[in-house]
Length: 386
Image (cartoon, rainbow, N blue to C red; front, side):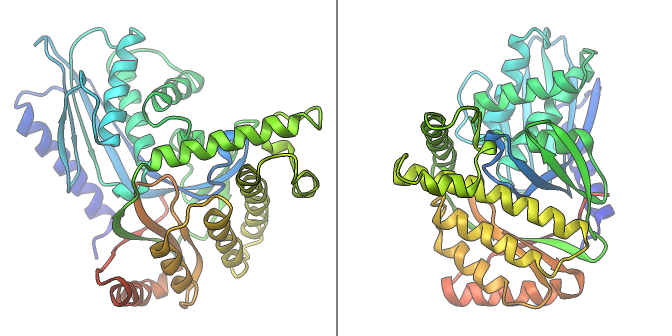
């Protein structure tokens, strides 16, 4: 199996090869590299001042920018499976390309980019990371542009720029958890993020003994951006409805489960389900944090499973393939967590598996999925970034 060093060297080699292919005389004015970000718990609470858990993983995005006098801007985006030269004057059908395009246009509109550039971005982050991939592209490109043009910036300015870019490209599903994850880059830990106070804290995780295994079915989810954004709008309706009955509610962060149940008839049924997920997911994050702080991994499985089930039933992210993968995964030895990956354009699950069982897990999941659906999924084995 490929090691972390091999994979990182491969990305650097690929990056240099891409640069040479498009720009034989490229002279970098700035280069940056960041790891990928994966949501563990707290999905879809981020727009209601939620508490979230996220991980940095050993896959990366690497960006180089050259300021040029050629009176032509060129934007190149490449992975081991895709290659694009982005036309920044036309809307992209690929969301990852649209993120890069809107990063360029936003920074140009803000006067940060005042000359033509050549930009090359290579990434090894799986496509199924969805928003975790898009955020990495926006963040690394923005940071590299700021460095290349020698624009002074602090954390607040960088965060505001990336948020502005994502709102213009991916919409309201933009999740500041990822941005804080990139900025803080806590190594060997999970990120505990309080989105009301913007307090980012490292959370101890036994990264030597556990791996993150992504099961990618390669089955696409149509219009996932619209689906997720519609859920946000439904939660906004719920907040407005609840504000009519209790003064002081600013977001769903201020609502507990008991209060919500008492007001079940005050908001539409579908809206209630979305709000119920949001409120109970916050409780699950708080419980998971307590378990991790106590190094109690045995009870983590039920918490993460409850999150998957609530995404399925309350948030209506209900996909038979992912329900099957999750239900089969939690039966296997060494698994301490399994759930669907939300805000992803591809039907995928993440699984936290003890390192001694990763091989048996992969073989068994591939076998069971193949028997059920006639096609083998792809397994990505990831480590926590350190």
